Image (cartoon, rainbow, N blue to C red; front, side, top):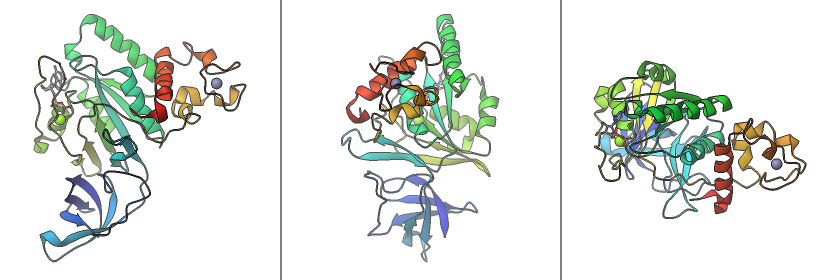
Length: 305
Ligand SMILES: Nc1nc2c(ncn2[C@@H]2O[C@H](COP(=O)(O)OP(=O)(O)O)[C@@H](O)[C@H]2O)c(=O)[nH]1
Ligand SMILES: [Mg+2]
Ligand SMILES: [Zn+2]
């Protein structure tokens, strides 16, 4: 049987076949992981071949089909090892908030860069607009404009006040979407709104830090309708990037990508070199905040944090 992994708990894997039936599976004893160094050999979204047993406890995942794409982050404890957030996705959605908790532009940019390594289209959703003060609404306008100009889709939403939900719903249609963001930005609230049966635990924001508490521990794929799926991931504190070389990084900033042939030196790092086409465009087609994110990712020894 061929199916899609919809939930992983470490020792068990839930696999959905193409008619929607679920199988609780284990991994073959000598499962050969792909070449990547990862903490999870199987991730949500993976297409797998299952040997169906006579009863519940004997279904075995025998093989993983090649991944079309995936989002990976460096493991916090062992930065040389990755953790795959999800695979085979049509779009990466980052839920960000300007307050309670505040998502930094640096975090958004790291996420976008991870998605760009496979050219996965991204959507940036700014949630909790019901909470923003006038000055933050203005800030939001500017930030949305910045990202829209680069070519990213953005939305302003309130999951509790139902602002922007229809728009978001239509962006989810017909796709497998990965939902990510810090804890507390509203991922579970959104899932409950779209899929009441999902019955996700929503956490109060802890007053002191305005940060969310972790409750989702494992990624899980939910069915929105026959051909639309949403993968929820545990809140990400920091997104460590993996395996992006210095000379490669600028390729994952679309507004820089367009200019790359124009630098004087072919191995330009766009930091100090004379005749750099990127530096010449800062505050023009390249927003300063994006360039600063670029520098910060570059400085970070092999892009890990
Ligand atoms: N004011 C406001 N609060 C929200 C909104 N969306 C979610 N919340 C609240 O933010 C807190 C964290 O939400 P939760 O869905 O658990 O976030 P998650 O950690 O990303 O899954 C809860 O108290 C939600 O009620 C919103 O649009 N506006
Ligand atoms: Mg949650
Ligand atoms: Zn340059």
